[in-house]
Image (cartoon, rainbow, N blue to C red; front, side, top):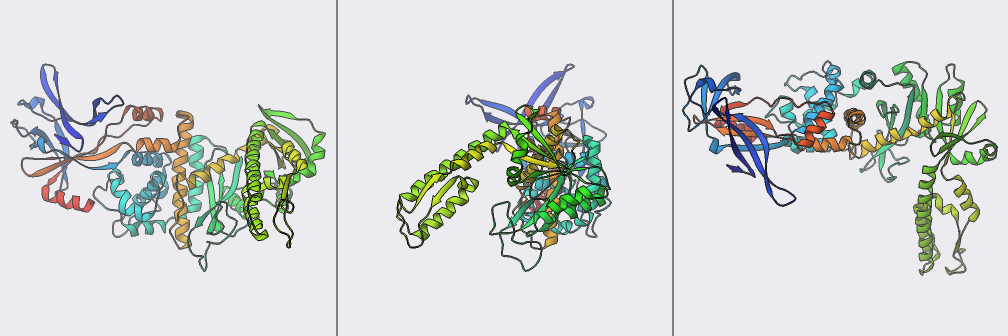
Length: 601
């Protein structure tokens, strides 16, 4: 029986001299050679057609609306069943239907990651059940899984995604809808437990991955809102790391381990200066996790000179490793000339300069040099071509200045390598008044400094190779920000209240915890695979309802996830995961089924 490309297939097998019929649902697929091959989608098992009770097999079904479990034996309608101690049900296999395909695999994997973090242990005592019967823990699991698998707005979750996913089945709430207001009300309950969650996660990272916390990475990012500026709240104009200075934003400060495992975050007003965030965050971490010997790794621009001095001169000095603006390299260049290069890694060398209680580390990377040179050459070539193009245009002086401003913004630092002569206010624009040439001294200086960067630390006794390794781990926190903005699509945020905005970011943070748990597993068990690739692969495992009418007017429903393919099986084996047993069948009256189906539409 064909049904949407699928059909019922019967396989006859003789076992111990007895004939058995095994049923499955298959589909036709056209391969690369244009041959049509059959693929088993669902295995239904044996449906009895024997006259001997010794050959009968029973299944346990949940009968609605009685709400009780019972055992029945299934027989095709054209076969006579023997007398048995339990109920015999004849099914109309010719009327079998496959309904409600929905995404199951990625939802199941999200639940497995949730279990690995033991988040039920944390949330169960904090999120109870409402008077109306809403289980807030199930709502939170849905919000986080949605953010991990197919991020979008709460409206889309309520209206579309939940109905086309198997979350309800996995939570034991088949047939129930997810109310929009429940999603919002659940978010309102989360922020009070943020600090406790940070402490809980620290223990879980240590138990799962044996993480050390002697080095912490600290950085900030922003996320913007395409809306009118609000009268109050944290949404403010400020320095935009997203290149959207026209939009209000909030700042997110984050602390992670060198492996990218998050420990804490804070949401700040969009006009918060980087230099004002560090002290309060250090105090919060110390209050949260106690005093300990930690090395704080930060990029340039975050700490001020005063803050670094405070960290050095504190009663219990706070260790730091921080990037240094390029301008300071020029001031120390002569002193570094006398120092020898030391190898810390293939293609990476360093020079050390102790100075006023700090250690300056000048690093030279061949890979970084090649990258910076390629970027500089590309931008300089584009700038030169643009200037030549402007020379050939008929422009007024004001028009020329506007176009030069745009060219300067596009070129960035490279613009300083070119000297541009512009007409004076009363002069026309021609070849004599508008000219440009290369600043060879600046070009030689840029050439000499390519691939160089300067670090500073108050740990002079530390191995320079180790310090350098700590600093390059800042790429991990940059990867966290990229994941939040791309894979987990933290933006757009549609909320207007600060509390809801922060709750949205909190859910994204929880989703990232699941994401990074999967990533850590993949690093050791299946290197080369990304979490996103695994989630997309698992999304191919669907759940369907196999519906078989009975001869007495009832309906047998068998919820089944589709047969994993070989690459799924290989992936599950590598990750040491095992799929659960298929869900139990249900049997109900036809009129009840029509009501349930209407609720699912």
